[in-house]
Image 1: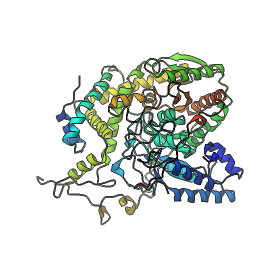
Image 2: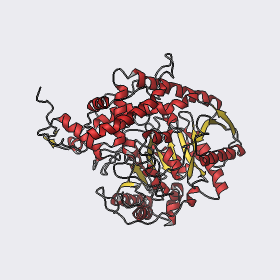
Image 3: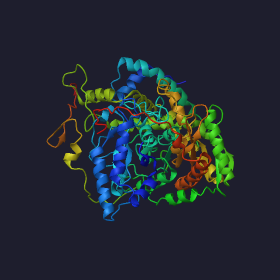
Image 4: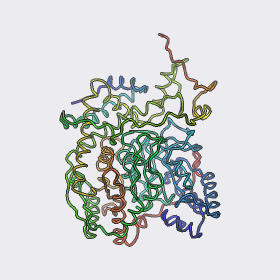
Length: 521
Length: 99
């Protein structure tokens, strides 16, 4: 593998600035890597990408190199390639949300975050795989086949953003964008040994993000280092007049916080371990790496205390009520009338619009999506609204209050990101509830709107698979994530003698497979 | 204990405009019952005095000036349409035989 692929985005920006590489060379290296390891759904490869835009990415890279020659750079990351989760609208590139119902749909507009990437000069390599409409924790619910974990091709890369995390973990791209509604950036980060951040709700524009649960969804960075996440977060974040739920106040200085944190000095930082997230029932290797990371933080000067957030035991149930309710409403727009596929009902001459809608939605939506739409419809229907959705909203208030109370005592809260390491493909598919448990630790942050980061904490000894360490901060306190995250990252790298991904196994080269979506040039 | 019958699932599928097959209905009802039982655990957790949170940010009336700005052209808006005619989305008949 070309060594340049191992560099972080920040390092690549330096190499570009020093003239030691070009954006075209870099972009080509990524495309070659994708061709070598990604494969198609049946190709046995990683399958991180649903669509690769080789021509477009190289043209954008060429433009970047030309700008650089004239001294007209658009940003610090000008020329560094990036992959985008297929739930974000991109003109000229299909946006399927991992669903058949949007097969081949080419948006007529760009998501704001995509516009910001383009305005900053980052070549967009393509769109990454995901659980259908972001519903899942393993990317197995993609209608286009699963993505494989670069650490073990028989295992899941997490979800719903498994494609973005796998692309970055497999060195196919130095950066990716993901989205997080219940952990869909952080949990894949944990199981693939990468960094993922869910910003404060409202911190990054949702314009052009196909909505699943609008009070929970957030776009965020997927990277190999904490600094890279800070750079990408600052680039795409900030107020957007097109998103009425975006925060008007400016973000705190994230890159500065990451650089400060990298000294590894945690003096005076109060860290709260969430009592309800960890312990019995959590994989021993996960807990061991978590505790070792805590020890490092203490040695670096942090004050670590245990904090109880009693309502968190209800977070999973609350989420799996609120989210399907919002999703059932948001997915009503896929009605075969204005975009997406249109399926005719069988054996019906001159069907009505409604009949076409029903046939299309049955054919176009997968099982998990149908489950959640039905649950949401149930919980919102008259007679049940107060008992389910209404109650869930109240418990949401309790969860928010627990966070508020906790942050009076500590600066950040921590937990393992996920109860287990990456499980095997197919292992949890038959029992939806078992799958939902993967989100135990990540869900509370989405319900309260607070930001969270997952960074690699090491490998579990029982299976040699990555473990994630989660840091949570108060709303608008995203800089704390980067300060503490960068500190822990530096302390761990010292302990390991290098970044964790150095220990990832070689990924076998596969035969490139042509798919209807045009994967691989 | 909430239990969701096959008929209820069929009714909800109606409301959600999804044509579930018999096999799907058989398959879904028990799965949904299990999920509903588990989420029902939140009932009674929050007292009557707890206000609901529908949104994490305290936002009210986010307005902008009522100024016309460029939007999608008709061509762009129709670009994803399964069928289009005369600058309009072409859709199957909306009124049924009974209407």
